[in-house]
Image (cartoon, rainbow, N blue to C red):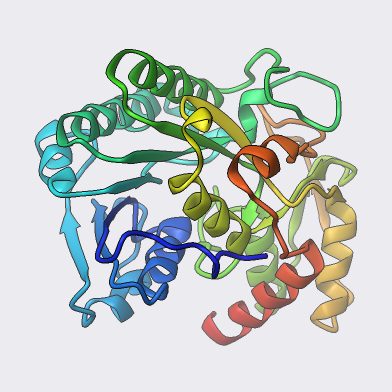
Length: 326
């Protein structure tokens, strides 16, 4: 379905935090491309975001880049001034890195979100849409993962995302700020960073294969994930901005609703790239969920979310992008 049918107020202003990051820059691009005169303000401190991700937007008079840190309330207040819709993507990802740096994750992912919620409340923002994560399901063993059936959290990163959901509920309940949380399931696609020890698995594998190196699979490769192409995430964010009031204060699974085993994904990448490279099998990563597959019926019902980018379609687009940009 996509999001071409959505109609926003003419000239509405969107604030995208973390707008120079992977998902954030895709959101900025999509909003600017709606063709309805919307303005985009991007707030980023470039700790993980990249100038290259927003460079193409800088000449657009409807795009504004603000360099600032969500850990600073004054920066959040200034960024929210005159804003209609907030898409809060600014956060630090990576489960294993959060285990190494719990205080850092608390400051960025919890305090940063709380600052943004408060700034949005004081600025009279119409809707506050924020990134949560499938990690909030923890050790709950049942598939598919369904909202309201969560287990014990397995990492500091998961704790930060669950805390964000609880704070957002409080801001809806007590202050009337309409918040909607989106539990992303293993998002991949253009502009996702393939570099570094904590890079996501798909871009990291593609980079290594294109460089003629052997990728490492953590564990036995029989883990499964609901890999979700970034265009589906863009759709969910835009639809959340216009969702009915009954969706406020809730969190929703955002995925395609599929299930891919890592070893099959790896073999598929090799086949698509015309390579036959034996992977290295390493130890499992601490804090990782074994299996992940989303029930997206709640998002379909309340957000009108109807993802049309399958894993196969998305991975083909992602491979093509990395071929041209690595």
